[in-house]
Image 1 (cartoon, helix red, strand yellow):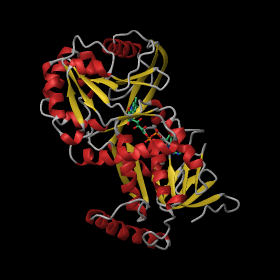
Image 2 (cartoon, helix red, strand yellow):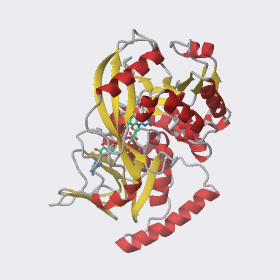
Image 3 (cartoon, protein in one colour):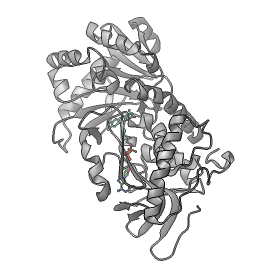
Image 4 (cartoon, helix red, strand yellow):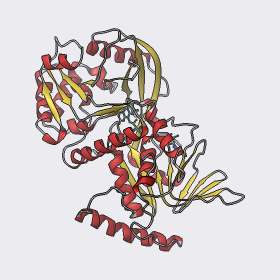
Length: 434
Ligand SMILES: Cc1cc2nc3c(=O)[nH]c(=O)nc-3n(C[C@H](O)[C@H](O)[C@H](O)COP(=O)(O)OP(=O)(O)OC[C@H]3O[C@@H](n4cnc5c(N)ncnc54)[C@H](O)[C@@H]3O)c2cc1C
């Protein structure tokens, strides 16, 4: 249905309303457009300003758990590459190097490399040197997650947003804080958006989840991370993201491996401060050559104040890994949502009410899978398949049948007529950016 501006209270009608213009919300909005649905995104900031622009931008598929997530990763990767091409985004396709300094670490990485779905291979120190210029004297080897991608965290959300702002059937309302969500209606001050489906993607901000969807995120707690931008890399290129085995132990794809728990205990004995402070080194290079490194200031009640000690630990760890002494050019902190029960999925999808989904990225892996989760979320909400979707599998058919029942109940409750499958599909050339 076209956007319709009504008088006085400014009501917009649309098929899908997305709350939050971070990576997760924007990818959902683009998925809605892919299937010919009109979409309105409401964002409280004047531009994307949440976790998406403050992190590393690493799409860390190789750290996802084995099984469904690893299989899903292949489709998600493909979708990210398509989105990046359409949006003109920077994508580094050089993967991740997880280095090992001890036999126990190498054994764990060997187990990870043995899973063919992960698309990772074990490298010796010499092979590491051919990929990246880091000191390999103390290294026994590394895992190369060849399928991992990296986007520029500072530019990517704005570039995805631009695809929507150029599209006549999509719009983004910036500087618009949502206070209330109910089935079919989103309220943001004087603005009301009537939408058949609502997807709330609020990120990890402390308060802005609309009040009546908060109960769904009760499984989530927040941690504060400190981040540094380092400059002075003397023209060196670090194409793969760099990290250590100790730093990846909490990621579900490594935590589940045999030997991970024992290794965690060893790291705790050898480097208690790193574990106590939850420091997890990940080094990525921005397109201009600067590096981003981050770590966690953990604790039951994270302090609002930055810790100088954590910054210097981070810097030391980065210097040891890289063998250079860059200088800090920016410091910032960022909140990250984590699941209390250490769920493996990376994206928490809740149904606070009919026709509404809360999609919250938990941990540092959520964006990797968000293109494929967006497909599921919209299939579930709207019944309209993507225009380029292949043949419908038996499983998809079952999902659609279930969604159909849900939608009928939602429509009956809110007086909207159920939309038949494919009713609003538009020819592929109308797809935005095509
Ligand atoms: C230090 C750090 C490093 C990370 N590194 C990586 C990484 O390498 N790879 C990776 O995949 N992930 C990484 N992550 C995780 C990743 O950054 C986040 O999980 C992801 O960006 C969250 O995206 P989002 O769209 O859910 O949230 P956000 O980017 O936070 O966007 C949410 C948006 O919703 C808006 N909003 C919230 N409430 C309202 C409201 N009521 N009304 C209107 N707007 C609202 C906010 O203003 C915000 O712009 C990292 C996270 C951190 C903290």
